[in-house]
Image (tube, one colour):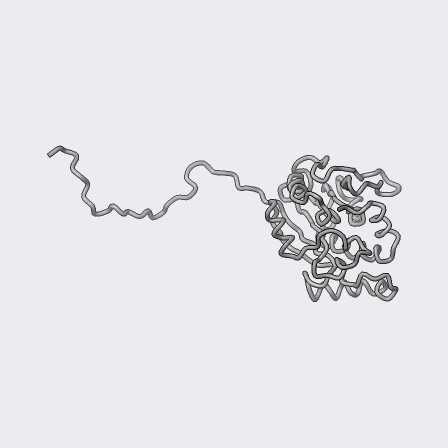
Length: 248
């Protein structure tokens, strides 16, 4: 079940814990993908807090929001790039996306297999997708007061296996949100320090979310002729005399 877009907006933009989470996850997204000119960057779910660094340099930025969640205009004060869409029917051309970010999308999806197939369809050859999901072993998945406490949390093995089943190749991963999910001033003030320490200690445990970067599997083009040449064929009949075809 998807969260309502107003709940997501209020969390990320109007609470201290939401702003801290936004900063921690966005910094890691930019560490993976520094802004590059001319790319098409698409987010699905509620990715708007993470895409602002790409507005100035990308050729196009599109924020896809599922109908069950609802949509909000974004960015404020600029031409809107948000689009309401079905989970598995995106108004995006096949093979046109260079960078795809999915957050608050997979764990709450009613049709995750169809959504992953649509993700694979729109991604360009050589493009990258970043899946951000609640960490099953983290504290954030156990608290209902944040968006990461809803839906199905994942272990690293579970998310990577699901991606492979739908034509993706997981390439690297990190964890984020190492500070406790608390609105207390001490934890909010020290959140950047916890992120630095957490990334040094673990790339999969303790963090509130897992971030898995994956590439699109592209089948090799078939070549004419035999698939493999036999360099040293076995001559099992060598030494056996050939039968005489003449009648006796």
